[in-house]
Length: 306
Ligand SMILES: NC(=O)c1ccc[n+]([C@@H]2O[C@H](COP(=O)([O-])OP(=O)(O)OC[C@H]3O[C@@H](n4cnc5c(N)ncnc54)[C@H](OP(=O)(O)O)[C@@H]3O)[C@@H](O)[C@H]2O)c1
Image 1 (cartoon, rainbow, N blue to C red):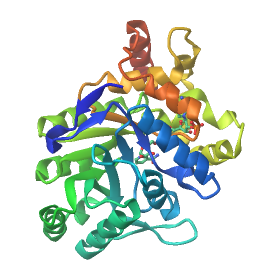
Image 2 (spheres, protein in one colour):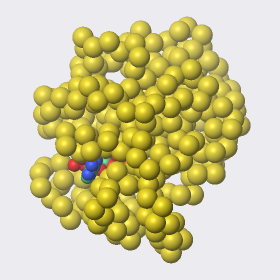
Image 3 (cartoon, rainbow, N blue to C red):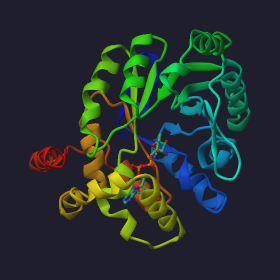
Image 4 (cartoon, rainbow, N blue to C red):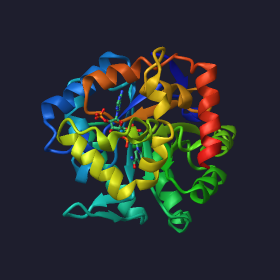
């Protein structure tokens, strides 16, 4: 595993991070398998673990806490998110009030069994949520030593640009993958301003591998439903990139990750998986260069589907 600097945070992070979210965090996915994946990731040198207060209906964060129990977390960069919460029956509530975000951070510390959160990210705020009062509350969490660095996770370029300019955030998590080349200039601006960038959904949620058509287990049904209900654009666009998976010199997932990590402005590509073999395959993408002809084919396809 290779490691990169996470902006001005002072942290060094593994090129491949592990996302503790979605199906991984759900009670119907066995605790033993979920925790086994975290331990496997640790053994493979993964140091970034990303979760959120509202992930997996609030179940992912405490599950990550249980997985880390008894482990030395001092060199890990655990990232969690505030501003959203599980509002019951699968609904996600939003609370970006200063008191709400502070409460959420304090609950995250307890869930994760940590004295301080290496990264606390706001989870999808609107620009109008980023009030002076909220920024002061975030600074207060840092001053109390409860949070080491502040981040923002958003898919909205307007919010991201605004956040870069505020000078308050140290980390940014954006969706960045072969389907999202337009994020590159924004990521470059964030890094120039001193932020560290975590790439979320670096495998485009598996849709270049035609995930919705590959049902082998219960989680695949869930992934397919998520794609068809919430990410139709990615499902459709992913088909054009299925050539990634037809090479003999590199696997499709490794090619997707090599594309993301080929951008030196990305500190870590944070993947989600429920399968040990996939985790091992993804970790092996660290340090792999994308073959030049494949890179050219990706760029040509991006232009064609734009
Ligand atoms: N999705 C979002 O809306 C979102 C938003 C903000 C942040 N994030 C962060 O980004 C992380 C990753 O996002 P994500 O899980 O949605 O997307 P992702 O990492 O791009 O893709 C995950 C999908 O790819 C499959 N996969 C993983 N490795 C594979 C391999 N080697 N071969 C074939 N399929 C493979 C997984 O299925 P298997 O289980 O079968 O491996 C899963 O369906 C999250 O955990 C979170 O930390 C995500």
